[in-house]
Image (tube, rainbow, N blue to C red; front, side):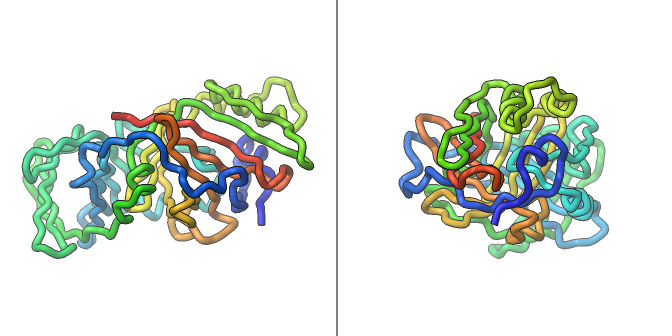
Length: 309
């Protein structure tokens, strides 16, 4: 089953369900080229805080050297916002706020590791003290504050497989594409360096060539960078200095078929989730997302990404 029209989604933020499988990508051998292991692959992890009243919900260290600190209200805030509607893999039309690097109860930045100590830029330091199990203590020292110790649980991560190792790193979103077919005929096959031109390409498919206020406003918030993690999260950074966080999992890992949702609890709900396919080719990650029921099954949006090192 497919959902409502994708273009209405992109331009007006309506609810959608894009759940058809992506056509034209049936090869299982979807990983080509060389990908080096990210610098912090060995220490990447998601820690869920188990103590209430600490102010923190989770701390995640990504394989590419980014940290995400989530505060206690973040889960509730995120769920309430996501129910307002989803739009696409990287298109989140809901309002996002930013104050320095603190986004809707989420703090983000880069980290380094010195022995057992994680040094988080703009936050402080965290030492993870374990007892051989998944239960750990986070010893947190923020600038000017005394050290506090918080109980946490190390969450299970996706395995170290070819597909997971390919996808789970930090990527710049460099180009956008549209491949649309109606009744077996190609209606549009274009690649765009500009997100603005990409949006106008979608509008063109609806038969409009006029200037759109909605497109101009959306173009200012173009998706610029994303991070996929083995804990099942992905984060999107936008040109207007805002951030959104979502969730993903594989449906068919060997074929690079995945599912995502802006609502963490409804990734299996066809009306609150979407699908994508992933392949690494010629030094670039290529993500394809099915288009709406107005087009043939082998129609998709495409995103071209390069790794941030």
